[in-house]
Length: 599
Image (cartoon, rainbow, N blue to C red; front, side, top):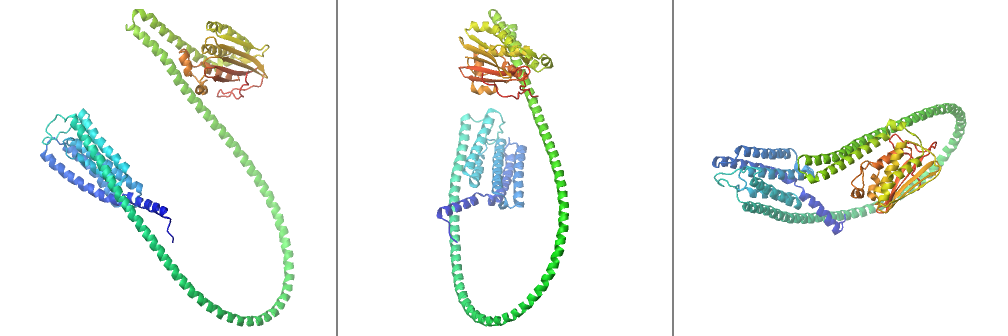
């Protein structure tokens, strides 16, 4: 048995001894007994105090001590019925934590009910701290020192400001007033310093004891290992001696066996002659048995033929069974596919319900803010807080918020009309280039006021698109008005409309403020406006692009946006021309179609 290297051996012994030192099991039962005796002594002191000193709440004190004693008695009975050493180390540590917490809580309640500042037992806080330092880690000891300090200082503060009543001990501390703040601070700091010093000193002492215990345990185990090694070497030496004696005896036996072997060899030579005679007789008998085996082979051949016939019948049965299994698997696959479709449909229904709830919440919030602002302006005017000279200005602000409210309501109505039955009934072939030119002429005046150039490149002879004409006008209005609104003075708006295969491709680009990259994923969401758009203009509902996306997808197309911050934004969309087998809208309103080609 060899010893491990010194470094590994030391670490092994230190880990083993550390586990043994930190297991508080052997100390739990004596600790519970000491607590019970201490509480009995405390009950006796309370009995004497209640007879000699007035101002003590005897009933509450007795109840607190009884609860404290009940916990300690329950812990003692549990440890008496269960050997503490058999508990896991984690359970033992939890019991120590529970005991310390109950001690700190009980001591705080007793101090509160028996004078607090005037009670001379406040230094007893150090005993739970000493217990934590002796049985737990240094961090736990310092933590409980902090808890004890906070409990006592918190009790002093609560009684000083009147959050808790002060139970004055008449006959010890006299009658109120409560002590000065300086005395309370000094007493709290003194107790905190005592707790932390006790925790540090006890932890250092216990650490030294544990280190010495680990050293002793390491030395003891090294000695045991070396003794075991010496014992093993001694046993090996004894075994070698015994093996030598046994080998000598074995050689003597082999010599005797060799002499016996020569005698047996002569006997076997005589026996081989007898065996030759027996072999000749056996050969004659084998010839007779060969004839019998030939007859048996003929019978086995007949049996094999019958077995092959039955094997053919079994193959037919196996084929029928395979066909039945294949049919069952096909039906099972059909059921699995149906279940998957049902699960997908349920998920889509839940998603639609979530979207409806979120949309309702957003609408409620967006409608409430302008109405509240209008009501606030009108209330200021009605109650006379607005000077006569500023009444018109305040009414103008209220009218502006009302216009924002009307714009929001109009966008909401338009968003709800897009998927309505009436809107679907108004779908017809539309020359979208005519409605585009109409919206350009309508918005060109506002662009000229800011020096913005609107350039349109519309192909000739475009095919009609099957859509709602009012919705197409709304689509062009939203895209072009946004390109002008969020553009720079003297900027450009480039509009293109052309045919590509069985699609009509459109793009609307500007040289404006652009869209931040983090806002792109939510660009088409209801009520969403990028931060730079809000900073440029307060006016806006955040519904325009969601309306545009809904119109495009209802018409069987798709739309994407490309933007670079401070350089501009370009929206690209495509719509299937009349009679083309383009994308079709899914029940959820999403378009199952490829991205539009770059315009």
